[in-house]
Image (cartoon, rainbow over all chains, first blue to last red; front, side):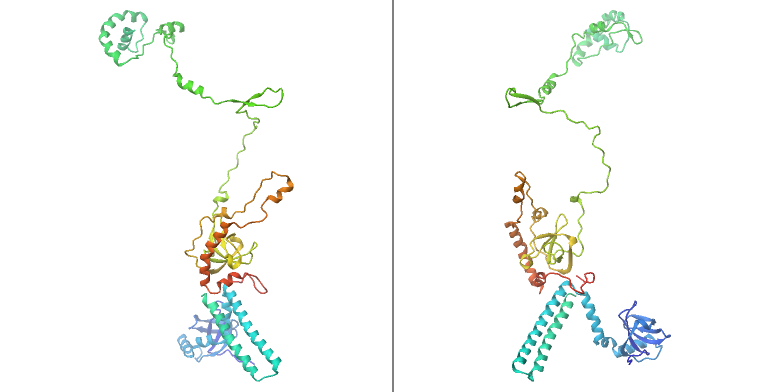
Length: 169
Length: 293
């Protein structure tokens, strides 16, 4: 049922508070509500932090309890947590949310145009397939064709969406 | 006369009884004879001592009329230089005018005063206005411009017939209104004035450096014109006033001049043309306070 546990070395994501949005490693448990926490590579000083503001990630580091910051840093960099984190879907969703909030009026227009074009392409292909299926009955070619246009359309759309918010920065 | 004068010279400010003066004439004459000639040339007027010997303080020997004779005032009648007065008197402006009058048995004309007396004197003069501080007329007000609005910014108009349209900002005019253009070919917004308060400034900017805006585009150029000449009967007035606005040739030429420069720069930015063509609108889940413009 539970897959992520609070343990020494567990990397946690801080959801609210002054250090919101940063990653920390649990160094020690103080009592039922608080943990000693340290984030040398994410700019969080060694401090006590309540569990409530922490959200556990999948990453676990290896260091003994109450290890000093240097050890935590070594373990962190060895596991390359920062890169691994950026590659997770969780982090990508956060980033996408931030970008969406920062969109200017012009960007919104560009996204709207890109979405429109993408949807048109998809619809076009769908209609084509529907026509074919209605004319000639079921065919083995269908699943191949339906996959190809979707992939080719998703690539330009995602590029456009990324280009639009990136270009203004 | 000369002798007396000479005597007067030698003894100025002397107050002696008249008898002594007459007796002293002769010796005074002999002494003064040489000096007379010389002095006559230098000084024409020499003031005589008082011809009215003093009996007691404040009381003279001779009466007014006797003094008149003694001082020979009958000979000395001076008038002020007359010429200026005469001239001024001559230059009096016309006080009345003669106007012809119609009607039978009226006498043909009346004499009418040009400058008439006032027909009303108020009991109190114009009441003093209370002093006020810092109340300036509109023409002297300080004009401000939001920092987010710079030349070339894309603005979203919120009021007027062009509401929701995205438009390029050119400059701020003298009264503080913003000069704005579509450009016309993109969204049918001509060179127009917009109010700063009823506009959203986006962060999208078109590079307008080097675009020359004609200098005759001022507030007076854009001001609405209204004819008011109610000479005719009331039924006809409402027709003659400007109902239809006609676009003058000057406006068209100005529009072309400005737009041609701006369109070139708009084309350089991808998708900007389509952006300016579109209109701004809100839909479900879109909250203006959360939007970044």
